[in-house]
Image (cartoon, rainbow, N blue to C red; front, side, top):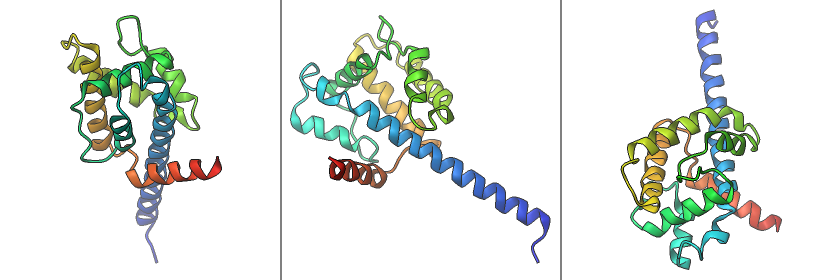
Length: 167
């Protein structure tokens, strides 16, 4: 027979697994929602088709944050959703509303804003907005991976396939 302590421990582990899964799904939804502006920003940020396709691999372990144009695209996409201030820094209130607009977004909104803000501060010295955006995105991704809230590429690809089939 299981002791009450083991039952409670099993419940805690189960609840943590469900919460972790919810966080990953929220991050997936936010990523896909944010990505909707990519096509609109492709020309403005001078992304080639190849570099645009790279964006679909953002959550892969070996994604390279080395092309300024990717940072320019992130800036354009952020502006598209009104997530930046006039000085190209994160608009905290608008970003919170954006994240919360997704199912269960309130679960991650505070944490995501905190992570982005910390990363922004880390690269605040960078005068070129595109490079700063790129470095901030790299920092944000690493922080998400570290906290186990980054969606897997398998999850992202499955979502892309489901969306394509629905069209």
